[in-house]
Image (cartoon, rainbow, N blue to C red):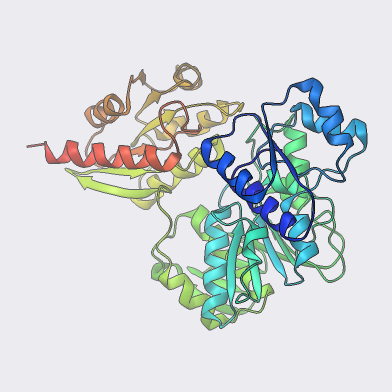
Length: 440
C-alpha cells in the first residue's frame, strides 16, 4: 500500500525474486505510474474502503508505505483477514545477513546515523546509511561494499516490523510526535520500543539515561550500553566526551557542542563502537563533524543579533532544546531570543513550548498553527502573528535587541507554506541575508 520511493524499491526486489506484486496508492503521480508499468506491477489507484477486504485477502503479506496512518482502511482490512503486515526492514533482513545498526528517537536520528557511519568508516569498517533516508534498506542491500548498515529507523517502519532484529539498537529520546499517523501517543511509543522488542543475547541496546521513557523500556536481554550527559558508559565529564575510561575528545575541540548535540555525539560513538569502531576513528569523525543543515545553524550575526535556522525542529521538544542551546551558546539567560514558530501541526499538543517562555523576548507565530502558538505564549511573552515568512523575519528583526538571537524553530511541519522543512529553512536564510544586505 503506497507506491513512493520505499515501496517502489520493495516492489523491484520482490518482482526480481519472482513474487507477484499488486500495488495500490491513494494519489499516485505520473512517476509512480511509469515505475509500475516498467516493473509489470498492477497499480490500483484510489481504492475505495470497501475494496480492501478482497485485496488483502488475496495477499500473502502487505507492506505499507512508511507514514501510512494507522486509521487507513487497508490496515484494518489486513487485521480482519489475518494477512501479515510487514516492513521493508523485515524483507531486507530476510534477504541479507549483514548486521544492521538501528537508530530511532523523536529527534537526532539523522545526525546520529550519519555520524556513526562516519566513525565506522574512519575506523576502516565499510558502512552505508539507509532506512528513513534517500535510500531504503531494501535498496541499500544491493551494494556489496558495506559490511554493516547504519539504519535510520522511523516509528513508521519499526511499528510494522514483525521479525526485524538489529545487531545494535539505539533509542535516543522520546517526545510526542507524528500523532497524525499514529493512533495515540501510546501507539507511537510502542512503535519506537520495537527497536528492542526482539533483542536477544547477541543484541546490543544503546540506552539514553537522560530520558525516563527510554530507560523504562530497557531490555533485559543482551548487552546494554548507556549514554548520558552526566552519567553512563558514554558521558561528558571534565569538559570532554568519554567512552568508559577512554577520552574521545574535548568539547572545546568540537564544531557543535550544544547539550543536545553532545548527547548525539555520545550516542553515535556508542553505536559505532558497539559495531567495532575504534577510539581513533571515533575521534577523527567527531572533530570533522560540522553538523547538518537546518539544525540550529547560524545564518548570520548582524549588528549584535544572531539569526539561527532550526527549520528541522518539528516538535515542541526540539524547539525547547533549540531555545536553550542558543541561549547557552552566548552565555545568555532569560529574555534574549525571538522565536519564530508555527506551521502545520502534526496532531501535537504545542503547550510544552511554553516551558521556555521565560527565555524569550517575543514570539512570532506563523502558518496554520499560528493561533495555537499564540495561545501557548499568551500572557507569558509578547506574541504577534505573521502572514508570511517575509513578514515573520521582518517582525522578529524589529523586536530583537543587541545580544539577542532570532530563531526559526517552528515546532510544526512545513507543508502549509512549503514542500519541506529544507525549503522553509532555505527561504528563511535567504530572507535574513536580504534583510542584512538591505540594512544601513
